[in-house]
Length: 190
Image 1 (cartoon, rainbow, N blue to C red):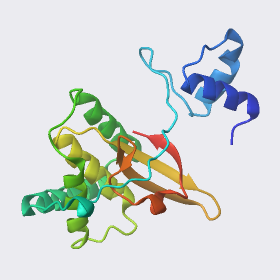
Image 2 (spheres, rainbow, N blue to C red; image 1 turned 60 degrees about the horizontal axis):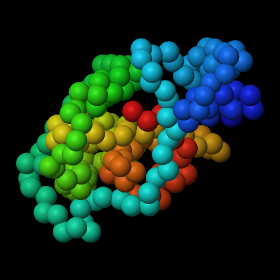
Image 3 (spheres, helix red, strand yellow; image 1 turned 30 degrees about the vertical axis):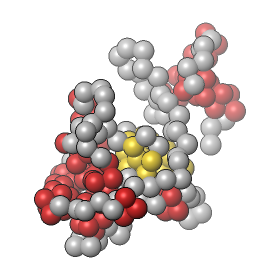
Image 4 (cartoon, rainbow, N blue to C red; image 1 turned 180 degrees about the vertical axis):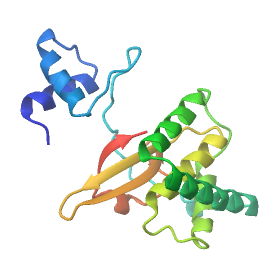
């Protein structure tokens, strides 16, 4: 939805191509529109990666869900609902980004499919319908606690306008099936 010149500079910025001094005007326009922000260091925005047509729900792997994981999922649901009521979306998402940065690089011994299966079991007790943001925050926080760094993705679609939030890890869906996120264009990955 950007003008061609802004789109070209935005794509160069995200793909780590060399920026030219003539790009300064467009970069300032992207900043003024709050599409990109100045940061400390040499961090550049990245394009949303393509999504693999794979989902983890634990059913296909025969994962037995311990009751402690269901209780954890329910507690994380409650916590996410509470912080969404008393904090701004910006503050909540910044907290998610900080939690993700604090994780030590490397692989976790925990399986993301276990978290997905735990939340599927919890969904039988608490409806997830219309609560994709709360559910995604709860899933992301549970994964952080297990040493797994997921991506929390916010997407939109037009006609009719709708927004959706989901969690993915290494381009694999954790919180949804591919059909439910396919109509949405990612606009923010935390």
